[in-house]
Amino acid sequence: MKSGGWIYILSNKKMGTLYVGSTTDLVGRTWQHKNRWIPGFTSKYNIDKLVYYEWHDSLENMVLRERQIKEWKRAWKLRLIIDFNPDWLDLYNELLTKSGYIPE
Image: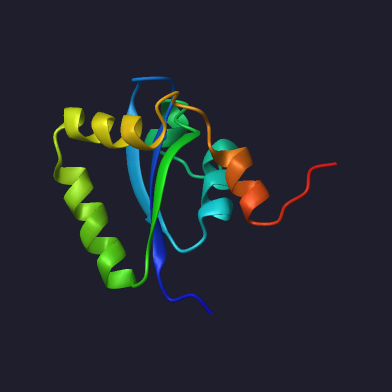
């Protein structure tokens, strides 16, 4: 079983409002955001597009990285996203495919 976790960034649109989070289940957590199962900031501002993610081998490293990114200036977060996903595509469907999900 994997012992690490994911850092992810969601946005509501290209260059829009950003949300940085962490989870051990990126597919499930993103689904929760997309379906408004999580009350609060992301639901209120329709932040449900997965634009960035990275894996960490330990939960400790995941938490440290999440805190680091959350403290960054907005411009640094934008650069991270643009380098990873220059077209600001919603990466959720790609993530589903990589995890073995086959749509009907």
